[in-house]
Image (cartoon, rainbow, N blue to C red; front, side, top):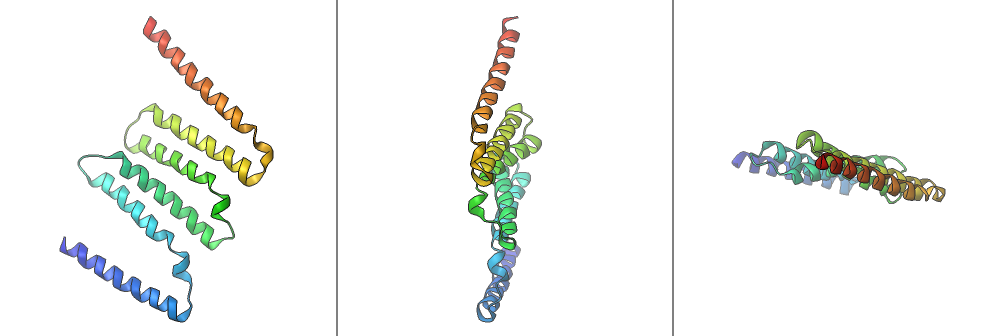
Length: 163
């Protein structure tokens, strides 16, 4: 435990020096690297998920979301992209979290369904609000397909149970 405190102390010391250099020499690289703090938080949550004996899926899901967000924020900081136009991707990050839960936590098909749903909603909202408003009708198609798929699965279960 003491070595962790020493690591934290060294990290904070060097971080303070870097902030001082940035402040006095008007060097703005750290200003653009703030998403790495969130990425380290996400990586820490993912590490907690894999190291604990009692597995809690929220650590893996939240860690995955934070890492995805950090990658997007870093890309936006070094390009001309704007996060306010890319907000539908956050819904897609929830889909990525569900896919990671399916792979590493449990193989329930509901996680795959949620992955498909969140990815689809993300793509449709991205097309509608970020590309052009002419794709607004896709929302109704997606909603209809989701209902059709969920009802067809319910009908198959009812047939199996009646047999």
